[in-house]
Length: 461
Image (tube, rainbow, N blue to C red; front, side, top):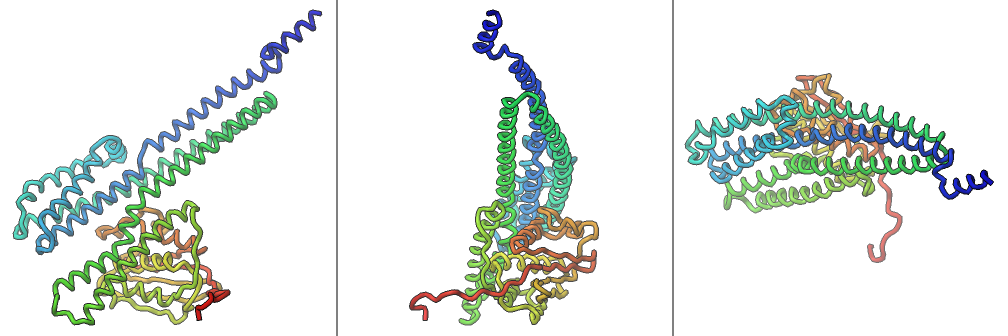
């Protein structure tokens, strides 16, 4: 009887059974251990989330861009080609970029990198020109020259800050990844220990583990979306620079010559402007597509591509003063192959514009194409500043710029974009460079013959 009463009591109150108490004790211990591990993981992740390394890089790149724009605007103001309001606007934009480093979390981040004195110096330099700027006229050559030199020096400081932020961010991320790996190993050990607690505890732990895995995947996705959003403006400014230059140059020539232009020359200029506008549209679409491709939202669009025509078009879209420097050798290159025309055009455009920018004005730039085995090769060779041997492996990283590029405008995103394009083509970017002698960048991707259409629509003949 006593035994039956005890069994009935265990049935009504199962938490009094030894298996349940053992499982509950194991679950409690596991919960405490898991809570500790998850807390450590959260603290570890907050170390990365609380240190906006990419924010510093993005703001520094924007500051460098605005400083270069202010320097260029000062020269144009001296020549009477821009208004005083435009000059003041560029000054205010640069001032707003410096202010970003003097407020809130960015201030602590700059101090951690060790650039607080440089930011303070930038503020002092910038404020020194505020009063003269209010009454500045194109005849104030000395004041304009001083403003130009200050803006150029600030651009160099912003570039150094971006590079320092990138290196510091990489070190922090490495530390966070190591800590995360260790904590995840501990969590795995705790999960294995739940087998002793029975099926009930095992199910609870497995569900918790799956939920944690989904949460971490969602967190990684959010980080990637945020990174693409921050990099979008930089990509657009870098990729759109050449067609905007074509539009600006053609418009200025039309303004200078006016009625003296012949109908043929006028048609040629308007055609260039129209082609550049169309290219801007293609660049916008392809940039958005590249971002979506990186997230796996759209598929790669390969179609018959006239490689010769594509390369010639890219060469002709370069500034007029640089077109005479370009040497083409396309005899060994197949004329038509399957490729994404828009993306491939951007890749060649990036390499060619970089070669022209980083080489002397009187030096030639060679564009060659050939087929080797089952691959297409398109190379761009210059005789410019080159890349140090110890930095060649980093050229495709976003925002990275070699130390030989000092004083040359740029944000360090073009080659990263080219690498992504080649990955979409199933290819790669080969780099050969010697410091002070020049560089050769080669696009390599599989050759696929152009596919013939399978049918003709009614009435097409």
